[in-house]
Image (cartoon, rainbow, N blue to C red; front, side, top):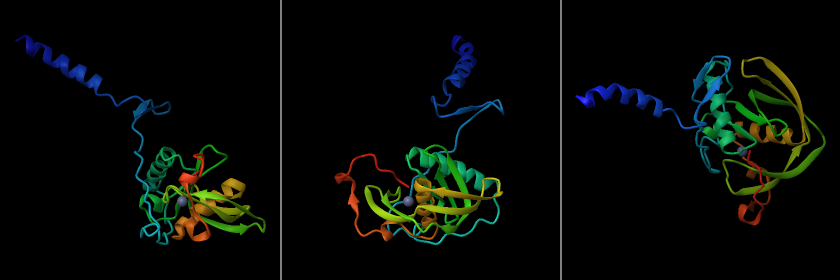
Amino acid sequence: MGKNRLFPLKIAFGLITIRPARFSYFFCETCLAYFVPMSPLPVLTGTSNSVLRSVSLPIKKVDKNIQKLIKTMEVTVKKAKGVGLAAPQIGENIRLILVQMNGKQFLPMVNPEISEFSLDNTYDEEGCLSIPGEFGNVWRAKEVMVSFLDEVGRPKKLRLNDFSARIVQHEIDHLNGILFVDRISEIVSHTEKETNEQYY
Ligand SMILES: [Zn+2]
């Protein structure tokens, strides 16, 4: 009899204690509700992976599914501590990339296209989340003009230089099935390097 009386209390207590672990949810000030963020996905790896080696298709419409995918890519690239990510790296052969701007937030670009490359080139080291542990110097244009659609489908045009220009060129290569190792003559393995390399 005592057990029965305690039963509803136990349920109530259970509901309180099965809240998600700290930091696995966030509170939206606008919606006044708790949300569980999209989970990060594993990043595909390997220089002969067929998804990574395919040419990705243009996105016809920036709808809710694309917006959801952008969120998923964002949590994935943050968890992997990358500076950029292309949709094929999480198994989607569509033309969508994320590019870290000024070392901070990630800018999503739908159907990105480079319309201008500067004549100035820079030679610098790159790594790739899809080729962990390997690095190499790649020639890239120092400055590019990139056109794309933003996360709600508005057309945008941006001039990028130096590091962000390098990231966008690396990520657009992914959309064409090209990996940075295709553009270099020498690979340096991680064991010979310091641990501050950046993955794209
Ligand atoms: Zn990459």
